[in-house]
Image 1 (tube, rainbow, N blue to C red):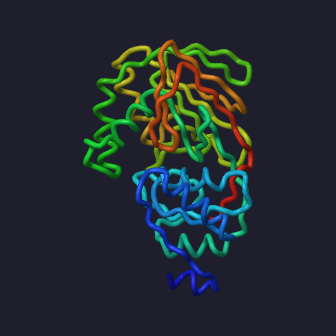
Image 2 (image 1 turned 180 degrees about the vertical axis):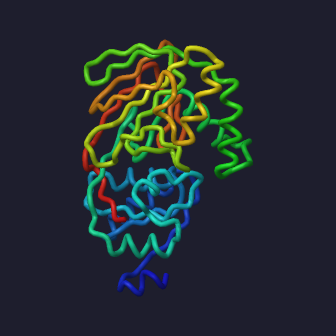
Image 3 (image 1 turned 45 degrees about the horizontal axis):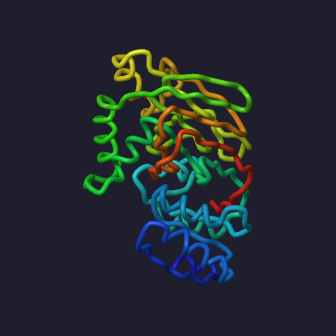
Length: 267
């Protein structure tokens, strides 16, 4: 790549072939002595590469090419590949935090409830519409069909019980596309922002939940947020959750924690 050669570096380029392949490629690059690993893709690809580089000195660079690009937006990374690569090559790496839920690391946002439900539907094999429009279509249907459940949370020793539409665990402030679920969150503050959105009526949910995706989350009735280092989410039934938009199945309890400064980033 010209931009890399102009900087005096040599680049190896690999294309992922399956889920988990980006993680394997990143680990291999570290073993070969790479000074920087670039993730070119969406939040799921970035998550895989970041998980491979966690707790190591090799920094992550990002070329945003996903549906939302929430982390890249928060970090001020250009959507133009040439600029993003050049900035990463010239940057002084710095540490940012990583979150963890049920043993899985996340860089930006994890969640339980509506956003996990939407992530599962959006990533299903029968969803052929990708990008922001495809995500909005899936989310719009979910507003009318999703049924909240009751949760018990331990947030740094404070107990909360809630019938929640969603529980967001935010390292970064937004899902992407300016959907700022946790406007006060920062990727380098050493804490996670846990956001709980409760449902008092379905009509109120239908009116208010779209605000979670248009930058007005804090104006939603039933919205509450807490900054924590450790927590526990419990429910009477197994919970689905997502990490950086990738859906997973969990049990009746999910442990969450922050890993301050666990990832080096070049941006």
